[in-house]
Length: 235
Image (cartoon, rainbow, N blue to C red; front, top):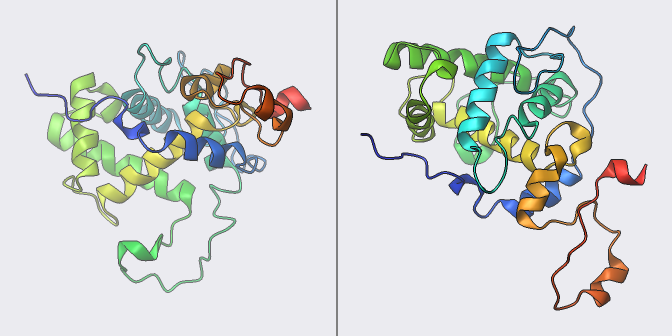
């Protein structure tokens, strides 16, 4: 039996509170740039804004591998993370609205940041295609058809930059996938993820910031026992 390659939930260490604070202020996605398509039955069974059925299946399998169902929370897709990713890639972020894309695009050191000609939607499309091509070559199946153990091993190989991708490294794709998964798990539910505020409840985050000034004195040194509140609760 292959030993566990990705300690479950380890990806959340050091990222919980910081990501929650960042994602809570994440700008709302712009209107979809692509016609909706029917989502597969099951997790996140909502009309898809940009992901194809194959891409959606990959995303669901990936976020459920990174955020498994356990005593801490439901799975990533049950928390709406795949819906969040679909909406983000369909909007301004996915279209690269804030990226300088005039080039040139030479290969550069990782610390210089994103250097590809692809916008995020194109990057995730290409990354999913490369990931599925690699798992077919390695395991004989697309990523979403692998066993849970093999999915964990495959993601670990990508994280270690040992999977052969064309055009960019597997580590670059894994890092982007991990980042947007964390954002979806901790963002305000109004953006589609963090369903039932599961991510906030897990870490004890109170929700929408700048509304708890009076409670600071009341709860100083005590457990904060109020449920979290989202943007929708104040609209």
